[in-house]
Amino acid sequence: MKLPHTSSINQIAYVVPNIDEAVKWWAEVMGVGPFLALRDLKFETSDYMGREQPITYSAAVAYSGDLNVELIEPIGPSIFADWLAAGRSGVQHICVFTDDFAATVAEAEARGAKRLQGGTIGGGTLGYYDMVGDQSVILEIAQLAPISLGLFDMVKRASADWDGETLFIEAADLIAKATAN
Picture 1 (cartoon, rainbow, N blue to C red):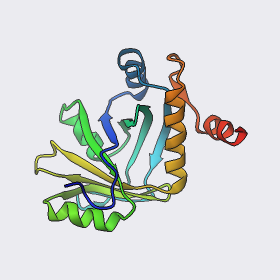
Picture 2: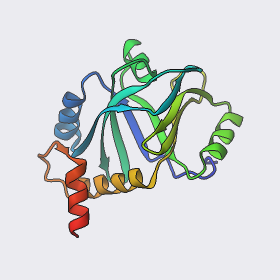
Picture 3: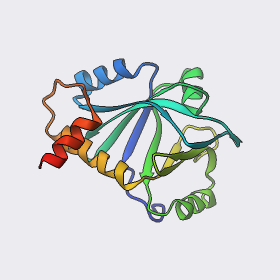
């Protein structure tokens, strides 16, 4: 049974040591692009392993069909940095979007989820939960602001029209294109 107030699993996220190299690999090998780069993101409020902690990272997002592919390069202490420090590679977390963060978190916790980190960013609320006890299955629960959801929709449209060569797109270019139509 899926969690209440959520979409299907809509995002798969990889933590990478170098976002530019990862974007190039995803474009050339996996045929996914273009990526919207979001550099030096900072949570407005955040916690990490049960204590208040600033979380900073860079991300790049693209779509493969309906699947959002996120690449994350950690900048400071976080579960993302822990992932790389442990020598892990591959999928770091999956994500569901929700329209009721508290209700979705309550149900996930009733199923045994343990919060690893989370906070607020860009008018939205994110939480990362260990679903099995060893961080091999991490679920991000995200209640995004309407502007973020709109930006993701623009990235999805750009991916559908991708020329196969352009690695990065800029948010300003997406917005200008959307308002011109």
